[in-house]
Amino acid sequence: MSPETRSNPVVRAAVAADIAEIVRITNRAYVVEQFCLKGDRTDAEDVAARMRTGRFFVVDDPQHVGSLRALVYLSIEADRGYLGTLSVDPDHQGSGLARALVTVVEDICRLEGCRFLDISVVNLRKELFPLYANLGFAPVATLPFPRPEKAMQPLHLVQMTKALRDAADL
Image 1 (spheres, helix red, strand yellow):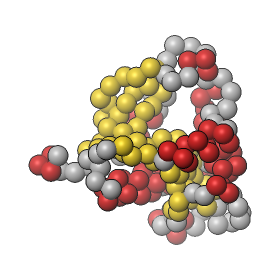
Image 2 (image 1 turned 135 degrees about the horizontal axis):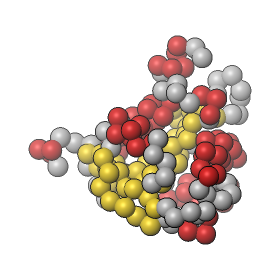
Image 3 (image 1 turned 45 degrees about the horizontal axis):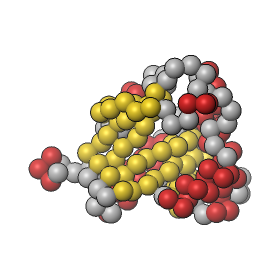
């Protein structure tokens, strides 16, 4: 990978033409959940529905026109942002793309007046908790898994939150 890809990935807002790639990258990134969840993580209908309620941000693969390397979903309600579906193509994981996407989402949330950014993580994905802790998120609650029919074993979500302003400004 080139140094400029690691240090300055170009993040852009996704458009409807990106739906198939969003589905492909998300499902590639979340194949690691096959030990606890049945089927694909998402499909075109789900992504299109999310595009109506929030926004996806993507990083294109400069070496393959029309392909993505990474993506994230953002929705905002009142003073809280929700970061979801953070997905990096397995061939590009560890390259700083997740951090770059989270930074963009945080910046957008601050510009839009959010005080907090939330993310929900499947409790069985223990390897993700240190990653999100390093990004400033802390666990605050547990939530039921929204699609229990997909669960192959008992699981729940852990809601993690990050303050986007200094405590004095909250």
